[in-house]
Image: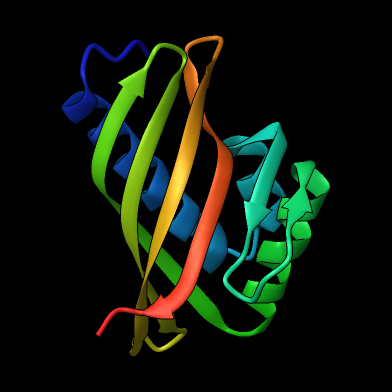
Amino acid sequence: MKTKNSEELKKTINDSYAQLTQFIIDNKPGELAETLYTKDAKFYPPNGGMVEGTEGVTKAFDGLIGAGLIIEPEAQEVEIFGNHAYEYGIGTVSDKEGKEIQQERYVCIWKNIDGQWKIYRDLVQGIPIE
């Protein structure tokens, strides 16, 4: 999908996040990682550390799913820089019953690979928004 501007990409990203949340609900961490992240992605989860690639992202989301958590990210700001885009967003963390636990800030760098935007770097602050 070719995006012409940041607002258009913001909608595309939020559509991808709806898909991410559905993958979590459906317990499909491997499909989530493969569909939404680049093969060489680096993910910095809120509990610290860093995981890389499809396998690392899969394991991170498998742990999140195992803990009974559902994440609903939402892009707040998006800026395109050629084949990359910066995104700042807020993720809502809920339990399986839909009870909101907290909201967290995050920053992603997206990469356009063959016309498809995928997450290249994902840094979650892990500090609840007051």
